[in-house]
Each structure stands twice: as structure tokens, then as C-alpha cells.
Length: 242
Image (cartoon, rainbow, N blue to C red; front, side, top):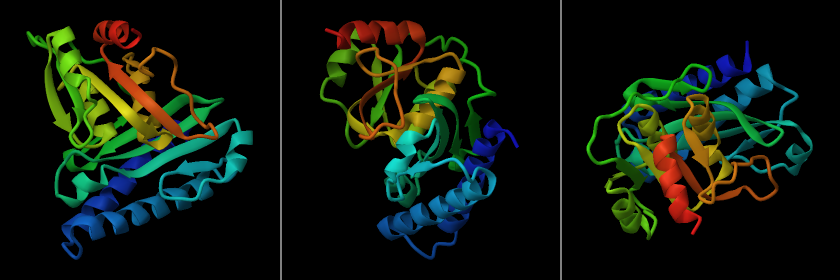
């Protein structure tokens, strides 16, 4: 099985488990999210040990073993991105599975199980022009950056709020929005898979200062993120670099 196939199958399989767990109605809210995180994480880790036993894994739901820093290949996963949205019965949550090679987001898959979609970095393309008169910028529904109003005015854009980072990045890929902007900090597992898929589609994905996204670092914090259509990202970068 290729790395790309494996990433997609893991994201899709974990998504199916999460849907079944939520449909059981046995748990709700925060309790459901806590159990779901563990179930999806266990599924992905067990499968990776079977299929890629030599590769270390960085997961939101597992202890961080620093031995990964000596490895060129590292799987970076978020078994349930958007736990709050998942527990609330919303659709904007995701499963992230990515492979970083030499610090770069080499490939990834993002599943949006509630929407029945799986995006993989080797089978995506940039969305067609939207035809919207005003671009749409998607931001966090719980932690929108303080400067988003100013950014919207700069780009003559409208703002929309959404949950999971994966859901927001894939909304750009689907053409539902034009740009995803985040500031205030994420971890590598929050955006490695979404960045890999976006880059695979020919979209822009970088830090807010325009620098390349780097993974498998000792400090897993990624302070900011821009994903979007290249022409809009260039205009946004001109602002953020000031």
C-alpha cells in the first residue's frame, strides 16, 4: 500500500468509527468527544504499527516521544480535529493523517466524515473561480483573530466562521470559501494534513509571514497559518508582513 493510500484509508476508517460512535447516542457532549478522540487515535496508531512499524508518530492524543526528531519520516495525526463540533452534532470536524518527510508536509489526507468526503493530497486540484463579487474568508468560530475585521476590509471580503482547521482548509479546496486565516497558535497536528492537501491542489499554504510550514520540530506550536487561492494569499501576505 502506498503512503497516500494508507493515509486516506486511515482517515476514512477513523471517520466511519466516529460516525458510528456518535450515532449510538450512548454518550453526548464532552464525554462523547473524549471517548471518540481515544477510539480514533487507537485505530490509527494500531494500523500504523501494522503497516509502517519503522515510522514514528506525532499525535495530539498520545505522549510525544522525542525520538521522532531523529527520523526523516514522521506521521502527524489528529484523530478528531474539532472535538467540540463533533460533540455538538455539527458537521465541521475532521480526521487528519499526514506524513512529514524532512520537515515538509509531503502528503496527507483529511476526512470530513459528516459530509462523506475524503481529500487526499495526490488526488486534488485547485477549485474553479467562484464568481463571487466579494471573497469569503473563513476563521475560527471560537478563536477568530483580532485583526480579521481589518483583513476583511483590506480584501473587500466577507467573513464566515467554522470549526475544525481541516474543515476550514477543505472549504477552500471545495471552493466554498476563498481564504483561511488563523493566528493565535495551533499545533502541528492541527494543520499538517490540511496543508499537505492544499499544497497538493496547488493552493497557497504558509505561515502568516510567508515562510514555509515546517514540521517534526521539538516545539510543535505553529503560531499562524494562511491557506487559500494564491492571488488572495499574496494580498493577505502583503498586509501581514507589515
